[in-house]
Length: 301
Ligand code: NAD
Image 1 (tube, rainbow, N blue to C red):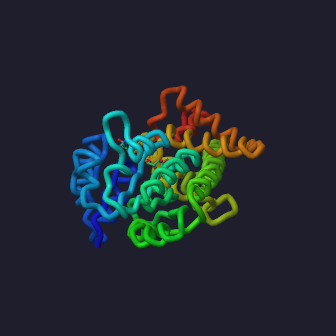
Image 2 (image 1 turned 30 degrees about the vertical axis):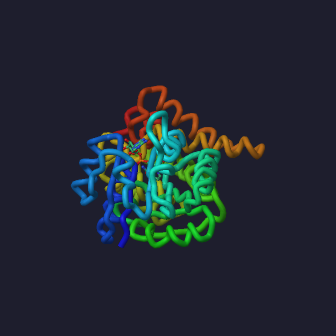
Image 3 (image 1 turned 90 degrees about the vertical axis):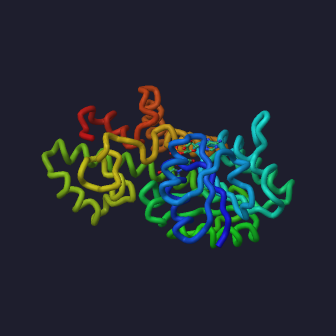
């Protein structure tokens, strides 16, 4: 069993770190939010009051942070505060599971390599429910030795651990996957609204769609009608399982990737626009499925 530092204990990092504890690892957790540290402590994570305290004696560090700027601050440090790359002992394995832009991920790989530290980008798919159940899909990019070393540590949190190739390829895979998620999320929302307006019972329609050609992860996991799927934000006033702010970030990463290779992606542009509008309307901290209200302002939830 390993000593693992876990930095970023939010909707995803909290339950992920708890699954490492359940697997018998010693996990020391740090988050800028004391409430997030406290919630993880309830699940068996040892609280740390700084990144330095979290990584002391750790053989591996896992980060689960919102955006590229947060991952850069955590690994590279900020003025007066050294980053993880400077704080860890030689040979410590670094695993960044945050969904971030490829350019920042490349900078982190380079900074780690300059210190001789193994580093993988290992973003995940599966949502908060997958984090809780330990069934996430990890997409792991990095040097083969680092990917091989990371795999057994990821397994207690994972349903699938899939090597993607060299550095930053995990992030590229994740960005493409989430673009598809958001498009299928819109399909589930438009189907749910239309079904309601046509007088169909929500459960009857969901029972049909989940075994029919309208099926998708989004409609199975985030069906935007309260009381149909346990894991949907609509059950809980659209409290974030995955915030509109982070979804808008990911949609933006997909569009930036497309632009960098001269592609235009009309469906991705549409959903990115809806997510941006949610932010403009002050709903960035709500669940990303809140955009159903742009189709149907009276959508329940
Ligand atoms: P979240 O906002 O719930 O949690 C992020 C946590 O990081 C917060 O508790 C915040 O206080 C903490 N934090 C920020 N900067 C920090 C720093 N420098 N040091 C320590 N802690 C810091 O976000 P989340 O939903 O858990 O998402 C985390 C990452 O996982 C994001 O990149 C997101 O895109 C990705 N992701 C989320 C989901 C999902 O369904 N929620 C699914 C797959 C991937």
